Length: 140
Image 1 (tube, one colour):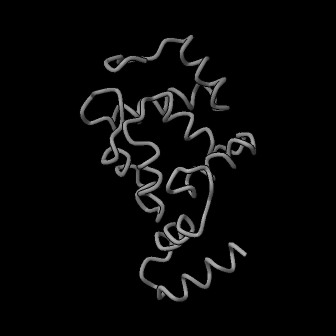
Image 2 (cartoon, helix red, strand yellow; image 1 turned 90 degrees about the vertical axis):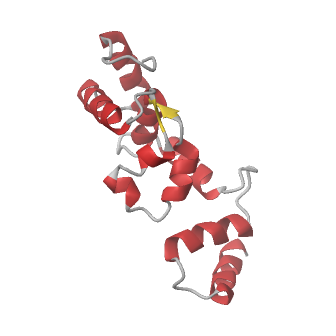
């Protein structure tokens, strides 16, 4: 699955399928989509490439997701999507959610992290004071 590989080998498909809990058919389909998204044909997706995914572009947390996934290769892309699969292990889902919410990457979800995430989710629909109150209720 090098940068310029135009097709996947059967062994690679099987290996990625085992890692991601996705079927070989899903892997092939995702590879085609990955190639279409990879406009620079570099073998990695940039943040701009990722925002071309309609399901992701509509998500208010897209800045966090693209921050975690920018410059991602195909295997990482599939592992990310595998976490969103109904067949994914609960621990993998929790780990991914934690990484989304831990904005500063210090291993702890603190008030600042929560405020950042809440602001992304509600935009400017809440005043700062209200956001502070909500954050305080969550933290306490």
